[in-house]
Image (cartoon, rainbow, N blue to C red; front, side, top):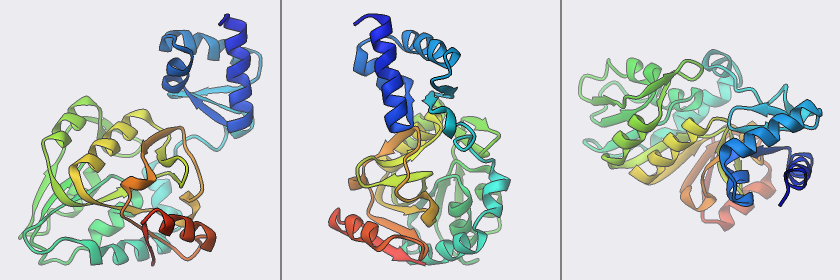
Length: 256
């Protein structure tokens, strides 16, 4: 395929789907990531897309796809997130068990809701979560290391993924920026996605914590299939049709 043909195909993808990733395009067209990035640069100069980390988006979406920082996310829908965090306690393992908390504002609320006498092995890649749990005298907190993303205050990258591959927990509380039945779980950042993927692999049971604004929404990078999810805890803004679709995939839906 000639470069102009490939670029037309990419432009059509962006126009129809809203966003594309470098990795997916490289695999689809059997070219290198660098070739795809050159194509995206050409298309951006033509005004057909806007480049973002890991791919590109339709120009009209560029103002909304930038990932909010942790403080902004904590302020958004805080009541719903606290309720989701409280509802998550029913899935916390028994005393002495191992649990994982993904970084994020909703998972932070679930960690905060742990009782003071909790006796657990807690794994997290979140600096704020690890700090908040230091008062649990009967629990062991394992902060997984790696490159720190200032925007999310989460450890990500190769070292983080390798560390997670050596761990095994009974329950993991995972956050997501998007969840659909067709494309599963997604997030804007490739490094966050790789870390979340490793978390899912480390967990016997995956409990996704996501308010209803994240549902029926797809972000740039996928990190899990819908069949990877055992439970979704959300708020009452969830569409009943979407609840039924999740149930058909054997996902338990809990409305906080």
